[in-house]
Length: 102
Image (cartoon, rainbow, N blue to C red):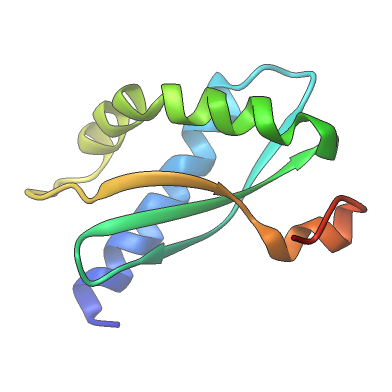
């Protein structure tokens, strides 16, 4: 991974943690676990959700919030080309939380 991608990845991780800490509802805890950048400018943001049965609704909320998150991200970090954002449940965290590991 190049230096620029590493900086973008770290900035996205921090911005996502900050944004969703403020914007998510309190019945479920959404934690950004990692960000993976692909070569074609797609950022996959992985999250864990507690309780695990709220994962589907949390991913739905995150996906609906992408435009607002991108605006927040653009204001906090100077970047010309914002990568395409996707949110995914982190399969590695399912075993830790007791949820499914598919």
